[in-house]
Length: 161
Image 1 (cartoon, rainbow, N blue to C red):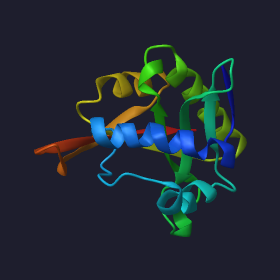
Image 2 (tube, one colour; image 1 turned 135 degrees about the vertical axis):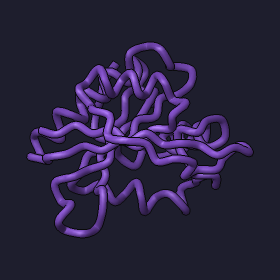
Image 3 (tube, rainbow, N blue to C red; image 1 turned 30 degrees about the vertical axis):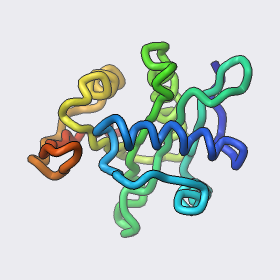
Image 4 (tube, rainbow, N blue to C red; image 1 turned 180 degrees about the vertical axis):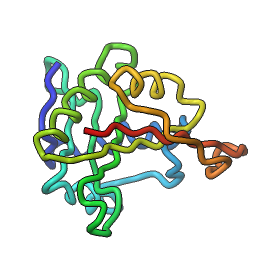
């Protein structure tokens, strides 16, 4: 497995993985499927913060992760939000661990101060992954999402450097 900076050749695979998460999980509260025309602005916005992909030995994308601006207000410039999505065919292979390590390292190199993650309460594996890497529980936002016919709580976790 390799983890590298994403480029335009990876965008369709990133979108495919993300669309699976939109349709099948509460890991994202997006409900509208993405394509190159409605998601390329987001994917192209990573000029300072990292957008990474994991690839297998055949260079197929197996997952992706990013650190994105937490807010456009300049007082938040040292704070980012983390996202990681793994192709469902590759769940349980340690890709999330490797992606998390790489994103934390990138955050330190960029001299960021805080990484924030918003995780749905039912995403137990994501919560455990964050705990493993030193993220602390900050709180819960009750019933802020509505997807698949149910109200969903979101856990806030953060890592401070």
